Amino acid sequence: MNYQNYIVFDKSVNKTDGHDVFMARSGAETVIVADDGLGFTGKSAGDGKVIAPLCHENAVLLRRLFPFTAPSPVLRKERSFGLGDRLGIATFGHIQLFERYDAYPVFAQQSIRELTLTNRTYEDVLDAVTFAVFREGFKKPWGADGDHLKTVKDVEYALSLGFTMITLDCSEHIKSGVTVQNAPPLPPAYAQKYLGKSFDIGEGESIRFDEGELRQTVAIYGEAIAFAVDMYNRFLKDGKYAADFEISIDETNEPTTPLQHYFVARELTDGGVKFATLAPRFCGEFQKGIDYVGDLAQFDKEIKIHSSLTRHFGYKLSIHSGSDKFSVFPSIGRETRGVFHVKTAGTNWLEAMRAVAVADPALYRAVHRYALSVFKEATAYYHVTTNLANIPDVGQLKDDALPALFDNNDARQLIHITYGLILTKKNADGTFTFKDALYNLWRDRESVYNDALVRHIGKHLDLLGVKQI
Image (cartoon, rainbow, N blue to C red; front, side, top):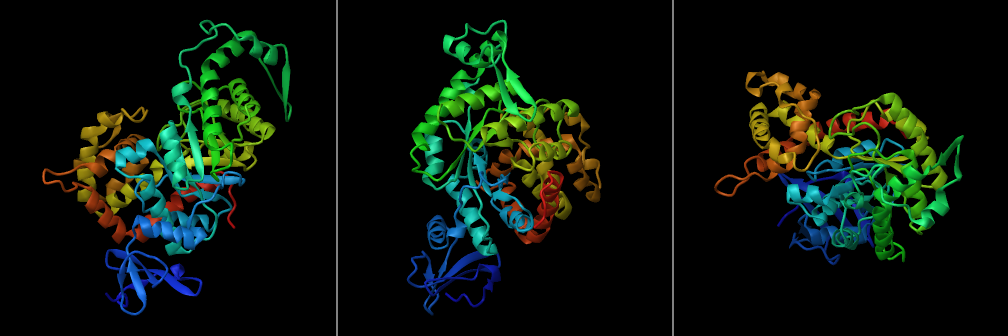
């Protein structure tokens, strides 16, 4: 097998103990070319080199030979940014962006829900990033996030593969429907600890509980705090895994008040939990793939206190469903003083589909019509307020009008939440209805997609106040 017909990716050329390793492409195939004796699984090229496929075993070896291709904890950096690439192809564009900005990327970021909907694994997610980082020669630290994990099994799975961030989703342990009126009696220990006291959190802000608020707060968050303490003690307390810990309390219907935020942070801290970030449920709505919905003045007021709390206790604020929340980014950047973690995911998929609308209108129309047919099914996984009546009929739109659908909030959410059903739909003969055609297009238009990601995610960073290097 001869690798001379392959085009070498110049940025991938590396040496380890005097041995050459690089990546190359021929048509649709990308491979690793390495000197014999390094352990890569592949076929001999006949000249002392091996041509190795982009498989899991070779990704593991790359991470061992070249540590820059392995994730590391980055949440303790001032600015970190999560990039949920559901397709396994967006990291190339993300790399171009984060080479320019003073922020640290979490390239590998997926929830179990996303893995299920796309039929991917954490091995696949991590390996795709490793190959992209190696190909592009990206040497800056980057992270891998086991996002919104809820069980011992899932946390252990992510950590065993080398993920460097665990986002613990406490939502199943947060009680809903609890009011001041129906909250159970207050345990005496909490009354002694919190009642009749004012807690100075600095910056002219203080926290004070009345008995009703405290009863309600303990009832809502007590079990979630115990869950977080237990998971921390199981996996992270002894230092076996080099991973950051994020506490997610945002997947609820009711906003996290500043009082509740203080209580959760205080109890976690007193419980010995060392966490890098905490994600509250902010006032208003952070719906998928569209801008903030709510009272901007109220948001500005509350995020100021939320940010003060993070500085008081020594962790960062994490903003979930951060895709496209352009109207609140300046406030987030300002009030956190440029110290934050923001998560995005679906917006990367939407930019990929915008590229389809530009390059292959017929394919886009077919995908769009299918998305409409399965939209109700997709709402079982995501909360949105989409009004399908506000979406123009794609059969009545000219080809050059299709990309503008991605400036329509309802059309964005339609495509946003149906990604799993689109990517996994199969024909009667077992072939994929859309997936192969989509990936072929994205491969052929890689630079177009990369440029779109640089522009779109770059807008997020600019509005957050992140400086270019």
